[in-house]
Image (cartoon, rainbow over all chains, first blue to last red; front, side):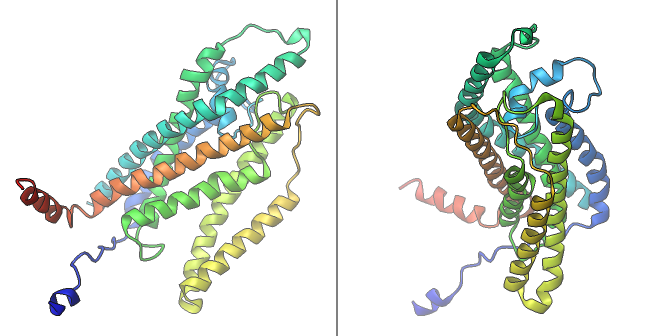
Length: 73
Length: 254
């Protein structure tokens, strides 16, 4: 009985191996930039700077921009 | 094979970001929108006659589809970025399981990406903010955000370097203290922005900012839990799951 209790359960969490930076770099470069462009359109387009003319993007994401903490207008 | 793991984590990060975005959207709609409407009410009551321009997007669309577009894209974008940061952090920040690493990263991201910039340049409802200073305010906000994220990364590296000499506990304390000191200096030297109209209701401003903070807590908390679950399943495919299902299967006939 005591021996059974003393036996530790085989659930030692497996710690992850590191991923080499060389494998991450191409994904980080391409998708990192893509994600930042998305954030720019939600957070700042047609506010301080504008790539597209007009007010359409600004007006469409107006409430999200305020509530996400970006300066809106 | 490693590249495939990065891709799989990235996809899961964006999905978890979308899921967390849905949760944040619910909070935004029920907690945030009433305060946006009150602020717009104030704005309209104080508007001059010349301010009545044609409405490009109706309030009904702005507060539903527009809000959803913004919040969900924000969730997906930060989910993707956080997943890429996770690929770097995994196994490098300390002896944490994939799930614990995800929640730790998410908590740090909440602080670095949102809370630290928010304490200097908090979210503002409509009617607060002078249109002429939008360029300056946007630049300062993004500067604060980038500075905070870079300093958080620097503090993490510092902690790692100090760990062999000071031990994990004191190295972490020293790294966090260094982060706080540099952020404090930045707070002190960056210009103050206060463009709240004199008679703007204080309770609306407080509740608006609180709801904006709640959204971020839900977004990053939800992301940490969702992404942690997905990452754990990807990196440690069912270690104890078989045991569990067998127990359930044998227990079921009884």
